[in-house]
Amino acid sequence: MKIAVFSTKAYDREYFERFNNDPGLEFTFFETALHGHTANLASGFAVVCAFVNDKVDAYTIEILSRIGVKLIALRCAGFNNVDIEAAKKNNVKVVRVPAYSPEAVAEHAVALILTLNRKTHKAYNRIREGNFSLNRLIGFNLHGKTVGVIGTGKIGASFCSIIKGFGCKVLANDTFPSKDLIDLGIQYSPLDEVFEKADIISLHCPLTPETKHIIDANSLARMKDGIMIINTSRGALINTADIIQGLIDRKVGYLGIDVYEQEENLFYKDLSESIIQDDLILRLISFPNVLITAHQAYFTKEAMEQITTTTLNNISDFKEGKNLKNEVV
Ligand code: NAI
Image (cartoon, rainbow, N blue to C red; front, side, top):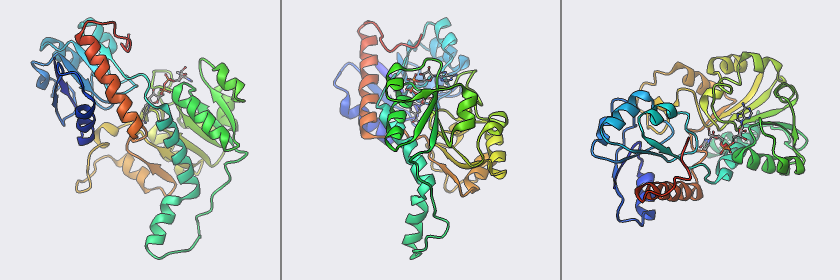
């Protein structure tokens, strides 16, 4: 079975080649992203393998279906970039990797908090230049602070237990509270209360019509001055223009993001010699209290191994006509 892998980097290819034990799977790796203008590259392939920033909208899916693609195998958990209704209409199945090392993402969220707070990135650069001064490096104790967690699924739950270990009080919000987390001492609260009481808010819910721009001018107005906001989930959970205003007004004291609303034009690319056209990301980069990573929270050896093996199993199950346990329906 022929598989067209889109948005491939050297490390994706390395993991697929290392873990594929099925001689019946034949991979072709494309560096380009999958979208309406590149979908025809999958002509002659039964399966396309796509990633977070591929634009698998109705138009792309119609082309894929027309040229004979039967399965879209996402090598990620989130599927907000796929038009599931269009896939159903065109008889294209969609599978994903529902869980892969949620700890990888949760630990990265904590890394953003600690770096922003204790400014280790700035200390590293200073010391390399022979500057041993502590001026402006002051942080705060995490112990005793209130951390708001929006979304307590697999990643949010892992984040809650790590941050609880720092001695923080956790106020969580989720449509489906977890009994295990309540037993751990996590308190569930309405969203308004989380906004009002938290010193740090970490977003771990998926991007849906309800959660789009959950952080905007209205929610920011309810938060404490100097709030720290962490987003490792999806860029559009935050209204970028509103958070920039919040940073200018000093309402937002710290912002750590691994995801960004318009990231598909930027992330995973080396643009160091390009003129970046996105003024909002340039404004964000200009703030001393903003830390941006380029959607790397998942990027650990353990997560890459799980993503690859689950994707390979998903494709093998499809090839053998087995039940698709990771199908998105
Ligand atoms: P999950 O499905 O286990 O948990 C999501 C939780 O959010 C669920 O408990 C759900 O009830 C809750 N939720 C849904 N709508 C909500 C709402 N309106 N308000 C409050 N809670 C709500 O998903 P998981 O695995 O924990 O992943 C969370 C998100 O993390 C994914 O949707 C994805 O966007 C992002 N992610 C980011 C990665 C990165 O590398 N930065 C890697 C993997 C996932």
